[in-house]
Image (cartoon, rainbow, N blue to C red; front, side, top):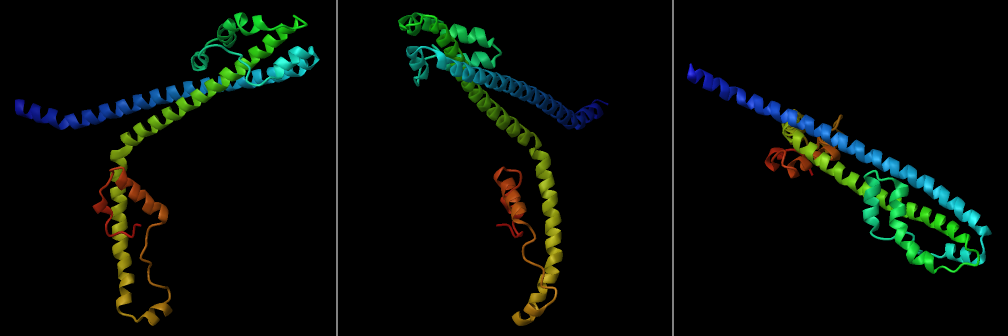
Length: 247
């Protein structure tokens, strides 16, 4: 009885392992899907915010044309510092869902004691307009950087997910590839019966034969490439595709 039970346990172990692997794969797929959904939702949120603040910045710049000349020259300068500290750190806060106004305001706070305190404007009230424009500049800058980082993260996530998926599907795809190879080899053997007529005819007779002899190549270029890729990825061995017209 103990031997029967032991044999039964041994025979059921592969099925249990397969079931566990299938469950783990399903859970992994769910996690990958959730992570991708969260990342794309965050990207969409950032892109919407960038569009809104870009429009606001353009509107403020247009209205700034009525400012006194000194203020206008300041606003028109290229390369103005509108945000202080590590831009990547600010961008990561925005990706994580930080409040845009609070995050940008905090990152700009040191500028009050440096750049803005040193500005000498004939119209002091223009300083608030400059600050408003620079705030929107900072939003656009930080959001643009956050979007760049998030797109890179999504790309890495996608590559990792597909790599894991390819690995989980490898065994089944290898079996399928071998089944296709077996069918192709059978087809090739059948086609050889027609090709063999070449041994019975002169070249001139072969040219006149209708229909022409069955071609040497059975596979399309895409199918040939697929089998070669299966070999490169370790699904099948190179020896398994010998005998087929694969280039």
